[in-house]
Image: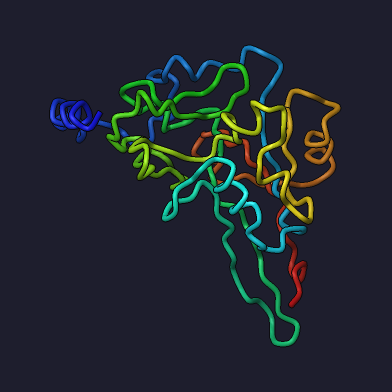
Amino acid sequence: MENSRRHFLKSTCALVAGVSVYPLSGNNANAEMEPAINNIKYALLHDETKCIGCNACVEACREVNHVPEGVTRLSIERTGPFGEYPNQFYHFSRHSCEHCENAPCVSVCPTGAAFINKETGIVAVNADKCVGCQYCIAACPYEVRFINPVTKAADKCDFCRETNLKQGKQPACVEICPTKALVFGNLKDPESELVALLKANPTERFKQDLGTRPKIFRIKAKQGEIIL
């Protein structure tokens, strides 16, 4: 596989300068970017008012998806402390694939390894097709992709598509969260807990101005939510 990767990179290196890292127009989109064909569009809500930054989600993701040390599909970013001692507090936010409906990483992939699953809307990677060119890493405005040191292919969160979801379970991060700060569900199901929460709470999504249409929603932490 290494020889094929080197051959590919040598034959295409002249094209690197011509590749746009933010091709958000649908004109050059991979065929896999068509809308989901079933009544499923998976998304995730992170309630920052409930997150305590314990990193249980990070470790569960690593164990279930066999993520090697040194890289991660998910991280919890802590900012703070805010306020003055002893009334100090932190904010915790999730950093992972946003599962964009208009995904730049899919648009730039020259082999079709990066794709949007038509049945679920999940942005995924076919490691067997990936040649390690790293175009998708450069294109991702959320900086969440990496090269897996074991498979040598691009990797990221896929909502446990090949592990827990195949077994009819929730994503590992959702299952393990001790405060129920994560809610996973189908945006097309009006009766789902996810949709109910999205209707009942003001939420935010990162970098919506880019037109990526991310499917990670956030209930923003208010000042003083997490007190030390």
